[in-house]
Image (cartoon, rainbow, N blue to C red):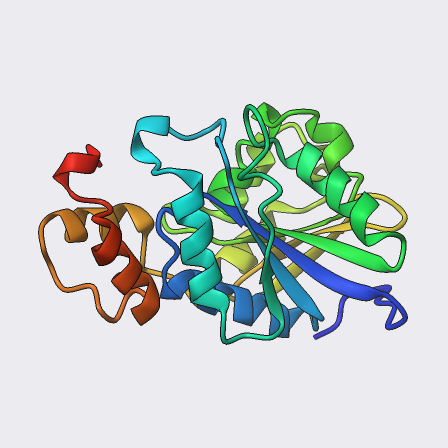
Length: 237
C-alpha cells in the first residue's frame, strides 16, 4: 500500500528511534511490517543517547544498546543503525536528529518518522514540536493501553478535521490507516499493525528473574546480554 503522493524517484526511508533497552523481536517485526506497508527502501534504527522522557536510572549505557541493535539487524540488508544520538552531548531530541539526517541524506530522500501512539500522545512536550511536524512524515502505530481516539484530546491543528468516528473505526480495526495532511509534502499516518505484546520493561524483569526469554530476543542479542552481565540486579535495573 503506497502513500498518497508517493514519488518513486525518491528514497523512502523510515526513522525508527527508541531506547531499545533492549531491542527485541517485536521491534524487528514492527520495522518489517512498516517497511512493507509503506514500501520503504530502508529503515534506520536510532538508539537514543539520553532520552528526555525516560528515567535514566532505568536505561543502560547507550554503547550497549547501540551494539545490541547492530547485532539484531545484522542479517537485514534494508536495515541500518545510526549512532547520531548515542554520541551526542546532552538529551536526544527528535528535531535535532531529523534535521541532521535530512542534511546528511539530502533532497533525494523522503523521511518517515516511526513512533508509538503512547509517545505521540505526548507530542506537545517534545522540543519544537510544531516545527518537527513539518520536517517529515510521521507514522504512528497503536500501542497497548491507548486508543487513537485519544488524539482528539491534544492540541494538534491537523486533527481538527479528523472525525471521532474515523478514529473509532481505526481503534476497532475497521480501518488500517488514516492519512492526515500536515504540510503540502508531509502527512501524519495513523497506522494499525499486528499487535506487539513484547515490552522491553517486561524483558528486563524476566532477565532479572532468570526466566526464559529465548524467543523474545534475537539469539545474538541474548548472548551479548549474558556476556556483559546486563539487566541483572547489580545494574540496578
